[in-house]
Image 1 (tube, rainbow over the protein chains, first blue to last red):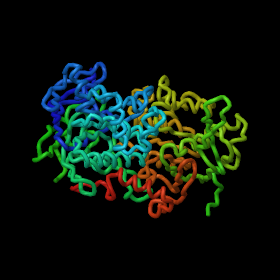
Image 2: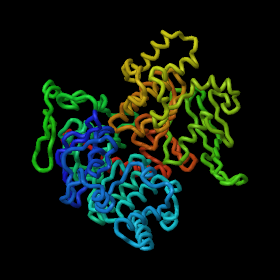
Image 3: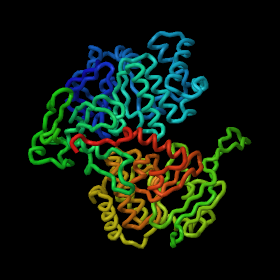
Image 4: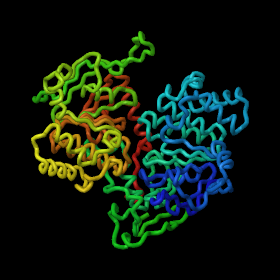
Length: 317
Length: 275
């Protein structure tokens, strides 16, 4: 459904996405993890034609067979919102402050589906019920600032689903929320996937959130894909082969660690995108790195099936 | 059981905000309702609750950054609320806070070294330039930053580095209580652990108490001796860290733990296939 080939994104002089290729199939939930600044969001912002000014993207992004990269604005706008929708981290800045929830939701359907205002408002109400927003009739008349953070995120998720898009890209949809609301949003996304075979890309720095939802995982480090793997589901071992993925598994917050124990850590800092790295970008933080890792960059190599790793010394299977 | 007197004693603390729209509309919202808590020297108290439960309001009320409606805040036996401004200022070096967003809490026009020098200039003005320089460099090193970073500006640093600077600035005078208000919540999972461990180390080295505010129970578990659960401005449960996680008594605490488990990927935490 979505096919990205050799995508690179530059904010000259910084190179934030380097030669990334990936695919998303119909009905699949793809998890994308990486640190702040790893380029994980930029991959999908580029795919949607939403990169900031000064950005340069190269490569190919095909959605349902059509090239999106460099596509005319009219075509991008027809695709975005209708077949391809995005949910952002901060629901307050993603909503228009001076329009009521009902108006901004209905507008989507009027514009993309040509519905009459009255029908569009009725559809918006149905959607708010579907995303389990309490008192949906009242919410339609309210403005974004009158809703709590969790309610806003429900509105945004509902809005992204209005035109029944083929693919939804959720960029850190739970990060700005407290634990109670995070759990609710994860439950909601699970329910929606069960009910409607929704295709979903879930971008997060928190591997635990992704493991609870995704079928497949892509790990991004310093603008490159360093590992792809199939997730077996919650409660089952993560078959990580890259030392960075393994570190993310160990660092995932959990309630099983002994009270008062030190937190597991990944030492060091993510690399500066302005500095060109010779060799593997993760080598300075990697316990398995040797001279070879510091001098030559490992290519992403298939391990059979959907699994691939870019590492000279991967962990044993 | 504890022979040393409490460092901080909060009793019956209530905070109200005016929410009325008109000039004569005196409608108020009670953000904190009769909250009581004590913190002993060197003790870490975790404060958990959802957004809007009053966690940050409590921190600000303790530091007298916002007015309170009623109640007392005693710091080493003295009522902070009735302290004259000059005396209050002198206490401020003992009570410090680290906020969630380090970039917003540091002055973008001040270098890292200048940001660390400011508390020294205010509270330890007798120190000479050279000594100040040495203390700044030592503090940077203590929080895991190279002394050369002192010449940089906050916006040139990563989120984790910025938070280390904020922690260095808050602890350079050796406070007796450090309030951490969601201090690691906006950091990447991979950096969170580094900062939490740094805070625990500093707490032991400086023998300071901490009020560790977080909605993330998985983090609170690593740092706290005691945990207080706040909901809608009221304390629902207080327990030792072990007890709270092993046998939470209030249904709300139980639901909070259930949410945390769901977010952490289920009942069994993530583990590797290859150990």
